[in-house]
Length: 287
Image (tube, rainbow, N blue to C red):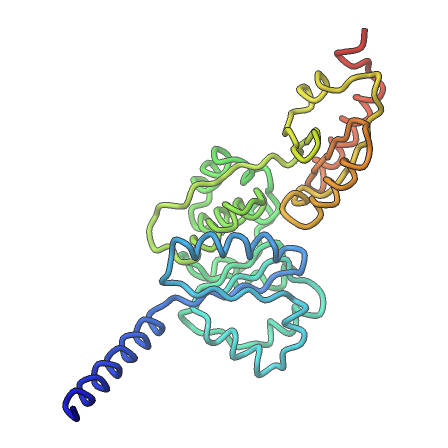
Protein backbone atom coordinates (compact mmCIF):
# COMPACT_ATOMS: atom_id res chain seq x y z
CA UNK A 1 0.00 0.00 0.00
CA UNK A 2 2.79 2.39 0.98
CA UNK A 3 4.48 1.75 -2.37
CA UNK A 4 1.27 2.57 -4.26
CA UNK A 5 0.95 5.85 -2.34
CA UNK A 6 4.55 6.71 -3.18
CA UNK A 7 3.91 6.07 -6.87
CA UNK A 8 0.76 8.18 -6.77
CA UNK A 9 2.58 11.08 -5.13
CA UNK A 10 5.43 10.72 -7.64
CA UNK A 11 2.99 10.77 -10.57
CA UNK A 12 1.14 13.79 -9.20
CA UNK A 13 4.43 15.63 -8.74
CA UNK A 14 5.43 14.81 -12.32
CA UNK A 15 2.06 16.12 -13.56
CA UNK A 16 2.55 19.38 -11.65
CA UNK A 17 5.97 19.78 -13.22
CA UNK A 18 4.44 19.29 -16.69
CA UNK A 19 1.68 21.81 -15.99
CA UNK A 20 4.18 24.35 -14.70
CA UNK A 21 6.37 23.80 -17.73
CA UNK A 22 3.40 24.27 -20.07
CA UNK A 23 2.44 27.47 -18.27
CA UNK A 24 6.00 28.75 -18.48
CA UNK A 25 6.11 27.98 -22.22
CA UNK A 26 2.83 29.81 -22.97
CA UNK A 27 3.37 33.14 -24.67
CA UNK A 28 1.99 35.98 -22.58
CA UNK A 29 0.35 38.84 -24.51
CA UNK A 30 -0.75 42.00 -22.72
CA UNK A 31 -2.86 44.70 -24.35
CA UNK A 32 -3.47 48.13 -22.85
CA UNK A 33 -6.33 49.84 -24.67
CA UNK A 34 -8.86 52.63 -24.34
CA UNK A 35 -12.17 51.72 -22.74
CA UNK A 36 -13.96 52.24 -26.07
CA UNK A 37 -11.57 49.95 -27.96
CA UNK A 38 -11.63 47.13 -25.41
CA UNK A 39 -14.82 45.24 -26.47
CA UNK A 40 -13.58 44.57 -30.01
CA UNK A 41 -10.18 43.40 -28.79
CA UNK A 42 -11.70 41.20 -26.08
CA UNK A 43 -13.94 39.50 -28.65
CA UNK A 44 -10.92 38.95 -30.90
CA UNK A 45 -8.93 37.50 -27.99
CA UNK A 46 -11.69 34.97 -27.22
CA UNK A 47 -11.74 33.93 -30.87
CA UNK A 48 -7.97 33.45 -31.02
CA UNK A 49 -7.80 31.55 -27.73
CA UNK A 50 -10.23 28.97 -29.11
CA UNK A 51 -7.53 28.11 -31.67
CA UNK A 52 -4.37 28.75 -29.63
CA UNK A 53 -4.18 27.11 -26.22
CA UNK A 54 -0.49 27.99 -26.07
CA UNK A 55 -1.27 31.67 -25.40
CA UNK A 56 -2.32 33.74 -22.42
CA UNK A 57 -3.87 37.11 -23.22
CA UNK A 58 -4.46 39.90 -20.73
CA UNK A 59 -6.43 42.99 -21.78
CA UNK A 60 -6.41 46.03 -19.51
CA UNK A 61 -8.25 49.28 -20.14
CA UNK A 62 -6.72 52.65 -19.36
CA UNK A 63 -9.23 52.97 -16.52
CA UNK A 64 -7.95 49.71 -15.00
CA UNK A 65 -4.34 50.81 -15.50
CA UNK A 66 -5.02 54.07 -13.65
CA UNK A 67 -5.90 52.04 -10.55
CA UNK A 68 -2.56 50.17 -10.57
CA UNK A 69 0.42 51.40 -8.61
CA UNK A 70 3.62 52.05 -10.56
CA UNK A 71 5.03 48.81 -9.15
CA UNK A 72 1.97 46.83 -10.31
CA UNK A 73 2.10 48.40 -13.77
CA UNK A 74 5.79 47.64 -14.05
CA UNK A 75 5.17 44.01 -13.09
CA UNK A 76 2.42 43.74 -15.72
CA UNK A 77 4.77 45.05 -18.42
CA UNK A 78 7.79 43.05 -17.27
CA UNK A 79 5.94 39.72 -17.35
CA UNK A 80 4.64 40.21 -20.90
CA UNK A 81 6.31 38.61 -23.92
CA UNK A 82 4.27 40.81 -26.25
CA UNK A 83 2.78 44.22 -25.48
CA UNK A 84 0.06 45.99 -27.47
CA UNK A 85 -0.80 49.64 -26.83
CA UNK A 86 -3.93 50.97 -28.56
CA UNK A 87 -5.58 54.40 -28.33
CA UNK A 88 -3.47 55.67 -25.43
CA UNK A 89 -3.48 59.43 -24.83
CA UNK A 90 -3.31 61.98 -22.03
CA UNK A 91 -1.93 61.30 -18.57
CA UNK A 92 -1.24 57.63 -19.31
CA UNK A 93 1.46 58.56 -21.84
CA UNK A 94 4.19 59.91 -19.51
CA UNK A 95 3.48 57.11 -17.06
CA UNK A 96 4.04 54.43 -19.71
CA UNK A 97 7.15 56.20 -20.97
CA UNK A 98 8.60 56.05 -17.44
CA UNK A 99 8.37 52.25 -17.31
CA UNK A 100 11.22 49.84 -18.01
CA UNK A 101 10.67 47.43 -20.91
CA UNK A 102 12.30 43.99 -21.30
CA UNK A 103 15.04 43.97 -23.93
CA UNK A 104 13.54 41.00 -25.84
CA UNK A 105 9.91 42.10 -25.58
CA UNK A 106 8.09 42.85 -28.85
CA UNK A 107 5.73 45.83 -28.74
CA UNK A 108 3.10 47.26 -31.08
CA UNK A 109 1.77 50.80 -30.70
CA UNK A 110 -1.35 51.85 -32.64
CA UNK A 111 -3.59 54.92 -32.80
CA UNK A 112 -1.84 56.50 -29.81
CA UNK A 113 0.04 59.64 -28.81
CA UNK A 114 3.09 59.92 -31.06
CA UNK A 115 5.31 60.20 -28.00
CA UNK A 116 4.69 56.45 -27.48
CA UNK A 117 5.70 55.43 -31.01
CA UNK A 118 9.44 54.94 -30.19
CA UNK A 119 8.32 52.05 -27.92
CA UNK A 120 7.38 50.10 -31.08
CA UNK A 121 9.65 47.06 -31.41
CA UNK A 122 8.81 44.31 -33.89
CA UNK A 123 10.75 41.82 -36.03
CA UNK A 124 12.32 44.77 -37.86
CA UNK A 125 13.57 46.36 -34.64
CA UNK A 126 12.71 49.70 -33.04
CA UNK A 127 11.45 51.17 -36.30
CA UNK A 128 10.45 54.58 -34.90
CA UNK A 129 13.48 55.16 -32.70
CA UNK A 130 15.11 57.52 -35.22
CA UNK A 131 12.03 59.47 -36.26
CA UNK A 132 8.33 59.41 -37.08
CA UNK A 133 7.78 59.48 -40.87
CA UNK A 134 4.50 61.23 -41.67
CA UNK A 135 4.08 59.32 -44.92
CA UNK A 136 3.90 56.11 -42.86
CA UNK A 137 2.06 57.24 -39.74
CA UNK A 138 -0.49 59.44 -41.48
CA UNK A 139 -1.44 57.28 -44.46
CA UNK A 140 -4.82 55.63 -43.87
CA UNK A 141 -5.59 55.00 -47.53
CA UNK A 142 -2.46 52.87 -47.88
CA UNK A 143 -3.71 50.34 -45.33
CA UNK A 144 -7.45 50.39 -46.04
CA UNK A 145 -7.54 47.40 -48.42
CA UNK A 146 -5.42 44.30 -48.93
CA UNK A 147 -4.20 45.64 -52.27
CA UNK A 148 -3.14 49.07 -51.02
CA UNK A 149 -1.60 47.46 -47.91
CA UNK A 150 0.57 45.12 -50.01
CA UNK A 151 1.70 48.10 -52.07
CA UNK A 152 2.59 50.12 -48.97
CA UNK A 153 4.54 47.21 -47.49
CA UNK A 154 6.44 46.76 -50.74
CA UNK A 155 7.44 50.42 -50.74
CA UNK A 156 8.40 50.44 -47.04
CA UNK A 157 9.40 46.87 -46.03
CA UNK A 158 10.97 48.02 -42.76
CA UNK A 159 7.49 49.06 -41.55
CA UNK A 160 5.65 46.02 -42.96
CA UNK A 161 4.63 44.49 -39.61
CA UNK A 162 3.39 47.82 -38.21
CA UNK A 163 1.45 48.58 -41.40
CA UNK A 164 -0.18 45.14 -41.21
CA UNK A 165 -1.14 45.73 -37.58
CA UNK A 166 -2.56 49.15 -38.43
CA UNK A 167 -4.60 47.69 -41.29
CA UNK A 168 -6.18 45.20 -38.89
CA UNK A 169 -7.08 47.99 -36.49
CA UNK A 170 -8.45 50.43 -39.05
CA UNK A 171 -10.57 47.66 -40.59
CA UNK A 172 -12.23 47.15 -37.23
CA UNK A 173 -13.84 43.72 -36.82
CA UNK A 174 -13.66 40.79 -34.45
CA UNK A 175 -11.79 38.70 -37.05
CA UNK A 176 -9.25 41.46 -37.57
CA UNK A 177 -8.82 41.92 -33.83
CA UNK A 178 -8.00 38.20 -33.58
CA UNK A 179 -5.60 38.54 -36.51
CA UNK A 180 -3.90 41.51 -34.84
CA UNK A 181 -3.25 39.47 -31.69
CA UNK A 182 -2.10 36.52 -33.80
CA UNK A 183 0.30 38.82 -35.65
CA UNK A 184 2.01 39.60 -32.36
CA UNK A 185 2.89 35.92 -31.99
CA UNK A 186 3.88 35.40 -35.62
CA UNK A 187 7.46 34.46 -36.48
CA UNK A 188 6.75 33.68 -40.14
CA UNK A 189 6.54 35.97 -43.15
CA UNK A 190 2.90 35.08 -43.75
CA UNK A 191 0.27 37.40 -42.28
CA UNK A 192 -3.26 36.43 -41.23
CA UNK A 193 -5.77 37.49 -43.89
CA UNK A 194 -7.06 41.06 -43.71
CA UNK A 195 -10.85 41.33 -43.61
CA UNK A 196 -11.71 44.54 -45.42
CA UNK A 197 -14.32 46.71 -43.68
CA UNK A 198 -15.54 49.75 -45.56
CA UNK A 199 -15.11 53.05 -43.67
CA UNK A 200 -18.68 54.01 -44.62
CA UNK A 201 -21.56 51.50 -44.36
CA UNK A 202 -25.35 51.62 -44.44
CA UNK A 203 -27.70 49.20 -42.68
CA UNK A 204 -31.40 49.16 -43.50
CA UNK A 205 -33.25 47.62 -40.55
CA UNK A 206 -36.07 45.10 -40.94
CA UNK A 207 -37.33 44.12 -37.51
CA UNK A 208 -34.48 42.42 -35.67
CA UNK A 209 -32.41 42.06 -38.87
CA UNK A 210 -30.40 44.55 -40.88
CA UNK A 211 -29.32 44.48 -44.53
CA UNK A 212 -25.93 46.04 -45.27
CA UNK A 213 -26.17 48.06 -48.47
CA UNK A 214 -24.20 50.48 -50.61
CA UNK A 215 -25.52 54.03 -51.00
CA UNK A 216 -26.88 53.13 -54.44
CA UNK A 217 -28.57 49.96 -53.16
CA UNK A 218 -30.06 51.86 -50.25
CA UNK A 219 -31.61 54.38 -52.65
CA UNK A 220 -33.52 51.61 -54.42
CA UNK A 221 -34.91 50.23 -51.13
CA UNK A 222 -36.27 53.42 -49.55
CA UNK A 223 -39.89 54.24 -50.30
CA UNK A 224 -40.85 57.92 -50.58
CA UNK A 225 -44.21 57.32 -48.92
CA UNK A 226 -42.49 56.32 -45.68
CA UNK A 227 -40.47 58.57 -43.42
CA UNK A 228 -36.88 57.60 -42.68
CA UNK A 229 -35.00 57.68 -39.39
CA UNK A 230 -31.24 58.10 -39.94
CA UNK A 231 -28.87 57.10 -37.13
CA UNK A 232 -25.30 58.29 -37.72
CA UNK A 233 -22.64 56.63 -35.58
CA UNK A 234 -18.97 55.67 -35.48
CA UNK A 235 -17.89 52.84 -37.77
CA UNK A 236 -17.47 50.41 -34.84
CA UNK A 237 -21.01 50.86 -33.49
CA UNK A 238 -22.03 47.39 -34.72
CA UNK A 239 -19.31 45.79 -32.59
CA UNK A 240 -20.35 47.17 -29.22
CA UNK A 241 -23.39 47.69 -27.04
CA UNK A 242 -24.23 50.70 -29.22
CA UNK A 243 -25.75 48.35 -31.80
CA UNK A 244 -28.43 47.27 -29.34
CA UNK A 245 -29.47 50.92 -29.13
CA UNK A 246 -29.71 51.12 -32.93
CA UNK A 247 -31.96 48.04 -32.94
CA UNK A 248 -34.07 49.39 -30.11
CA UNK A 249 -34.60 52.76 -31.82
CA UNK A 250 -35.49 51.10 -35.11
CA UNK A 251 -37.88 48.61 -33.56
CA UNK A 252 -39.82 51.38 -31.82
CA UNK A 253 -41.41 52.85 -34.96
CA UNK A 254 -42.79 51.93 -38.38
CA UNK A 255 -40.58 54.26 -40.42
CA UNK A 256 -37.65 53.22 -42.53
CA UNK A 257 -34.64 53.05 -40.22
CA UNK A 258 -31.09 53.36 -41.52
CA UNK A 259 -27.87 53.08 -39.54
CA UNK A 260 -25.01 55.03 -41.08
CA UNK A 261 -21.63 53.91 -39.71
CA UNK A 262 -18.73 56.16 -40.65
CA UNK A 263 -15.08 56.38 -39.63
CA UNK A 264 -13.56 59.70 -38.60
CA UNK A 265 -12.57 62.21 -41.28
CA UNK A 266 -13.61 61.93 -44.91
CA UNK A 267 -16.01 58.96 -44.41
CA UNK A 268 -18.03 61.06 -41.94
CA UNK A 269 -18.23 63.90 -44.46
CA UNK A 270 -19.26 61.42 -47.18
CA UNK A 271 -21.97 60.05 -44.87
CA UNK A 272 -23.56 63.48 -44.48
CA UNK A 273 -23.28 64.12 -48.22
CA UNK A 274 -25.01 60.80 -48.94
CA UNK A 275 -27.77 61.62 -46.49
CA UNK A 276 -28.30 65.06 -48.05
CA UNK A 277 -28.42 63.52 -51.52
CA UNK A 278 -30.97 60.91 -50.45
CA UNK A 279 -33.18 63.60 -48.95
CA UNK A 280 -32.96 66.10 -51.81
CA UNK A 281 -32.86 63.84 -54.87
CA UNK A 282 -36.05 61.91 -55.81
CA UNK A 283 -35.71 58.30 -54.77
CA UNK A 284 -35.68 55.55 -57.38
CA UNK A 285 -39.05 54.22 -56.23
CA UNK A 286 -40.67 57.64 -56.43
CA UNK A 287 -43.47 57.51 -59.06
